[in-house]
Image (cartoon, rainbow, N blue to C red; front, side, top):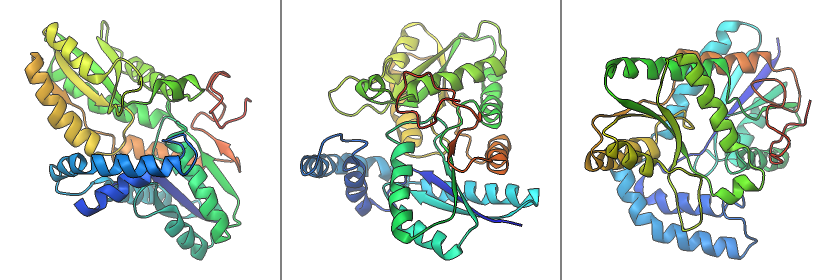
Length: 343
């Protein structure tokens, strides 16, 4: 029986209000986010984090003064380990690795080194790949793993936008809300975290993968005449971001006298973008815009289908290297940021 370590990657979040500014600094000093050389990137990160900290602290104050992302990821890790242990094939330990706040990759690498696994499986909790999230986390891990002297063979699941368990989990959460609004004119809005347009234009497959996820969910729902749309939230700065924006789509729905069902399609855990931006700020905007009824579908969290899907991917992974939930490259060749080689 092999001893395997599964590393779950996520963004991370401040665990108290004093941690907000250093968390933001860590975020904006990432070369995947601010694509400038140092010392310019460091200076810009310092400036942005200092200016945004008071606003961000107000946001986190709405949800108890800290991000719930780590405790929710701990719940997902426990559920995944239980599913893997139930399979009875190998011995698994699940570790959590956050990108911009504790536990950092450097801390986790030391723990994994001490665990001394026969194999390591890297599993980002970003279903859709982006150079700004998945690639950044994986690059950071490699640096820290090399520094810690980890030599175990490593398999990487880079993305799983059309994985069956993920799609079924979303469908199971959406269907009851649609049923509750049956007979009312309503639109399903799949809201994903935005990206600057130039990053997608440069070859990032994130937007394309978001569309693959939503297409699969709509097909699984199998509702004739379903009114649905993909949109993007959380824009920062003056540059052009992916369109349409969630705010614009909320206003449009209001002008059309529609009800709205918002689905956080790129998030698998609750955090400030769902609990504050969607639940408070956008709910207020919807009320002001005249949206008849505003509903928000929760994230997949520890939904049984989602956890089962993660476990199945971990149990079935064969390749030491990089693969995805489909087992073959799904991204068109134009997306050069995709880390899978063509099959």
